[in-house]
Image (cartoon, rainbow, N blue to C red; front, side, top):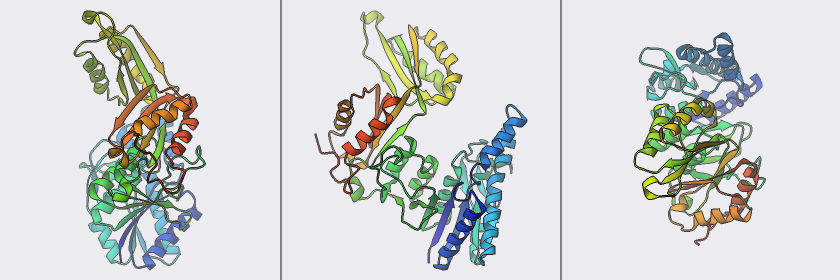
Length: 418
């Protein structure tokens, strides 16, 4: 007998028929002898509808009231799911964030969980019922409703699994697992049976949308085994787990791409101490996230040397940040500014990079053979990212995927030492 947390996303509860399917799955799991906690998102499209109502009502909605409004979507799903379980002969009770005592900070629309009390959930389970918890929401120290940001139901599920000591957290979605890359642009993409928390965290941060980043962080911190699987079949999905020797044998586990960034080039910036600090300090004060950074070699008379500084920012922030960038450019004496939104970041991720030399050289060679120019590079212990023109997205992803042997059933030697 185990304790299982099952999370169902918006598409999984998008219609009453699908909600009945969720009810059937939860009841079947309980009948196999498990205690079951179900976490539900709002029905697909509902959160967008609610947010549009808010913006149609006022130009800049109050954050507290936005959360009070948005949280109702999950409340509807939780109640309907409990009703569906009852209709199928099961027993269930719906619970909201404040009833479970999902305590958060007061950062409305993007709150972070501080603590969770599992006592209410255990009361429901001891009564032989399935606990159906509304995802995405919590309550702050003032008793106000908060929400955890888009994809927050994943975080709710993993955090509750950690708090109650669940044996596994099953994330049900409209795909049947984590793939080596996006199967929509690479037909040879394969489902991964097991992947490490670190690899999943990198893939999530680099554009893979299967799991929300914060949910992976929580799973890694508390060692929660996460099973990503399809709502519409019983086929096993992908297990996200701690590091294992077999996972380290795979040099590259996946290829990701992200089109959400824009490139900024500051030309002929004075090359002296404090200049770069002024640029990025100003961006940090404005809460602008900066990703890839490149500073070219100095040119000219050493006393008057200059350099080009390139970095990327989220496209959604570019319009807002342009006046700040131009002001910073004037302060550091830049001779010009160039913006480029027609870019994509392609990345390879794998634990095996730690112990295999030549992975970066192989990546660069694969791209060069396709005549793809690299505009910027960033690396971590298990990731290499390259900035390229967006028109090469599909070509680059396919070339890297197959070049590292991810199209093969066995990946143990997908990047030989060079």
